[in-house]
Length: 357
Image (cartoon, rainbow, N blue to C red; front, side):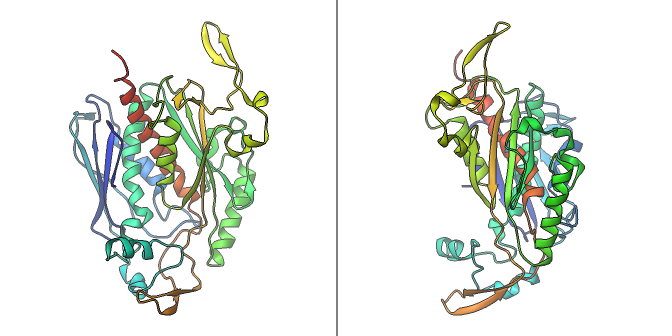
């Protein structure tokens, strides 16, 4: 559906080449101070046209708050917002009106609904994620007021990868380059690879690492509302996301349990652990340690090359996509990953307030 969350609920609407993208946030507590400049800052991090290695579509992505925030504070009423589309080139997609682009949602959308908006992918376009960034930026400001910190960074592009240990990197360096990688030398190599792939009319994938610090103990539910499951659902709902792991992840399957258990200790009167292979979540519930996870993104399917396909009647044809597209989604997906984490955490925090009197 178009809504995520149980108490902190976010509903998004709009298409890539429609009049506007927007959303409604319901369940936001009243009295939370919201700095709209910070919201716009997050949008600018996601904005197209921000560097030479992303799509050149020139959208300013200025958010308009319609309700729910008054004199800098939330009112407790629904927060409605829109962002007008101003730089659509819908004619770029006329040649695919009746054609299915390989590995895109064209075929599945047409099969499901019997109709599709071929202009830029319509609702299946990653432009929908702009609403998530607005909602996430607002949720993030609420979480910061209780000490929760969220950040993400590009940890792999193609075969160029950082070490999996997020503690080795300074998060203050993430925004110092257009790849959003906290290692300057590796970032240069990533940038060059993306530029090379873009020049070839091709695409490349990679991995984004996310970190949540100072998460309270107790967020998440023991069965169907496990915190890692909610994070995974949120991350895999992002366009081009193909995999999610947290804590030790898939790499841990080669170890014995005795090598990976997180022993409890008394740390100055506070129960803590000697390690964090669990990734800050045990039994689906946060344990107070850092939550860290990785999201894999595929090389996106929009190639600026001729591709064999079929039309809506099943006739073989060749398509060459026109328009403005990302050769690698990683740099612009970093704020989206952070925003989805913030949305999940805000909902989990409010849900936890109902656990006991």
